[in-house]
Image (cartoon, rainbow, N blue to C red):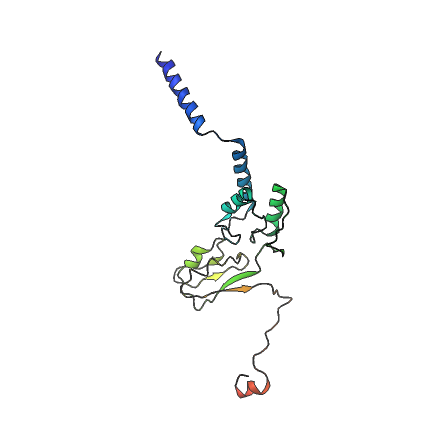
Amino acid sequence: MMFASLALVLLIIAGIWMLLHHHEPERDSKRRIIARINEILPQTQCQQCGYPGCLPYAQAIVSDGAPIDQCPPGGQVARRALAELLGRSGTSRRRANDFSPMSSQVVVINEPVCIGCTKCIQACPVDAIVGAAKQMHTIISTQCTGCELCIDPCPVDCIDIIDVADDIEHWRWQRPRWAGRERRAGTQP
């Protein structure tokens, strides 16, 4: 008798739990799609897409129909994978130009000015900054996505953003600012 009443109580508890936690099939499939999109995104949390991170961007793609080409760190690889998964075109009006897997800009640290506060290291979502506390820091340019999240926390303003469009084949010396007599005289034009 006691066993039967215990089994009845467990069945009632299980029934209540199922009623409270019942998932609609379409909500479940939405969650799976969001999870798959989130897996495709590079997880840099750089906010270049206009969302606070990769998961909110994935949710916006599914829920709000956000464009799938807003992730510069993911580049063409992520865009193609998202287009294939969702059956959408990979371009939008906002991003007319195709961007490469890396951004066309990176940040550089003016190393003599750097005080080694480590605030930029903490802000970098891709660990592209190396250095130690109270030591000079530097950027690993091949890892930098150009998200600029490290610029604002820097208390001494020693971080600048530069274009990396010039490679070794296209790089040229800058012309001198002074020419001829002005240079010899030591005056600027």
